[in-house]
Length: 99
Image (cartoon, rainbow, N blue to C red; front, side, top):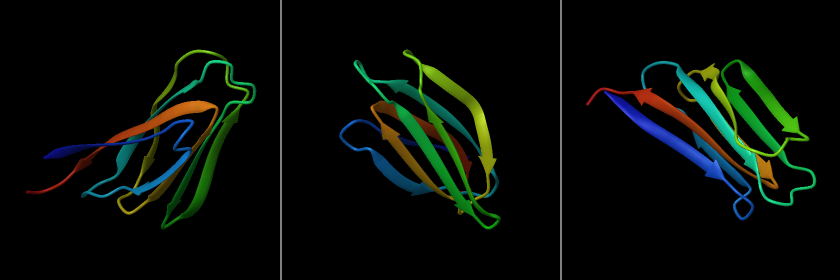
């Protein structure tokens, strides 16, 4: 069975942390969009797993909606930190579980 998971941040809640679970690696999809009037929009994703920590950071984001489909693949137990400045951002994934 596949379970849908999501985490989102905005101008009020600028940072969130989650972890991935399930039985196998998951593929993350990242969506983001600067808010109206943004001067220095930025999105940052930090992944911490058994292989260490990696960070993806994008600044100077042009207006409009952006998507990184199949952004990256991570193993179960990976901690995810999503941060945004002058943006809304969302990470989505599906976990495979047994019920």
